Length: 377
Ligand SMILES: *Cc1c(COP(=O)(O)O)cnc(C)c1O
Image (cartoon, rainbow, N blue to C red; front, side, top):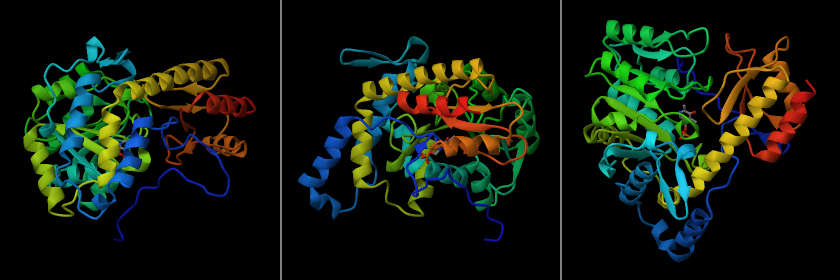
């Protein structure tokens, strides 16, 4: 207990209504069908709340697989016309994703916890980048998994060569987010493939695609040839459902079984019955979420133009957030001054990143308010 360092989430204040651009949540509501199906479930089948949910979440896993096949795992590039949704040619998955390749849980945070327990151990140092999702070191601490933390390149990209050489030396697995957070930088699928070619085939290689729908390249197509690859994804960002707590992995069925074994040895019930309905319905409506992702990408482009025109430094982003700083002003002060205008952004006091703020892309109106606040700085 004394050695635990729990994750600190973005603040969710109750004293004042802020525009929330601090937790990479989606500014758009879930689609109408989700609202309808959830209400219908409760009204029509209240007795379903008295019984345990489907332990295998079968319908949800079928819907997730179907969505991935229809979008290629990159919503913002999916082609939507009429009633159809299909992947952009470069995102098309060269095989059919099947439900036995999916494991789901209460947010990808819970899913990641089981992935850590199932695949990493206390004898080998897990390799991860210095700046990435800050929950990874928290889980490593919880499960007593030693870590080997690799500094970023000076342009904030991942130092792939160093990560691989340390993984080889430690004979260990590795984990990173792609696109990465909080940099917003994405590796191409080809770059990840080259890493997988070098990495040990019997150590687990985890790619967290929480932000992939906003402009990365999904590594799902690589699952065909790399059985040690685990891809983690979430409904919290691109599927407008952070409050629902839904996350999943896509991986070889053998690895899905391993994670399921871990899960069933702790709390063997899956996500709740309402979340299963909401998640399934969201996945059956990829066109709506593709439109949301396209709007986010549009606002991001506009925002990056604004940053450039107003002399803010930033890292071009493939996600729904941008890491930015104003030369000469501390990140803490920028955060405070934007907060005074009624807008929350994220500031990290970690050395190396303390000059920056991480700003989630909101809707048009929120971004207008943000730009007004930033112009005063
Ligand atoms: C937001 C985020 C998560 C957590 O998602 P939940 O499904 O809400 O638990 C996981 N990984 C990364 C990189 C994230 O940014």
